[in-house]
Length: 207
Image (cartoon, rainbow, N blue to C red; front, side, top):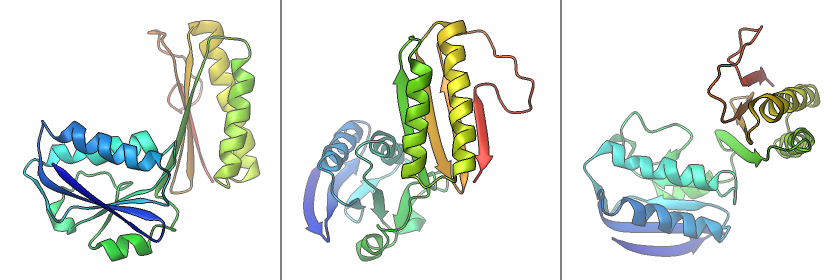
């Protein structure tokens, strides 16, 4: 697989050529992640010269998004005829028919924001969780009332992980379509008991 990279309006435009297959999947993924680490305004991938026969292999772009959406927080966009893509490609991967259109839309808010933090099994972790949620929520312009609820829930869930599960806590925040989701995972195999209809370890609010 070969890559041509150019700059346009502070963005990196990548034009991979060759065949996306099992033996080139990691090469494409790692190349795009490496470009994102340079922190351009966005990474636009022109798929005009990339051949792919298997829809599932396009999950490579989901893998890149997962690695770059939190840090370095660089938007990823694809320039390709949407008819070439499977309907199962997640909507948070932006798709535009041309490079010019992709570049014209890089300043739009992303369809999904995601941030995560791994917190140690330590009494200080609930405080770290509260600070992380407050900082992230303010960066995402989450309304104050919604943000304070998220801070309390994150603190309680992380406390449960540290005190009862006795494991590290993996805190994840997502903002999509005005809905803020707080999720915490730990290493305990015991299902949580919850008095509310919300799934254990997760809470969401419409903002």
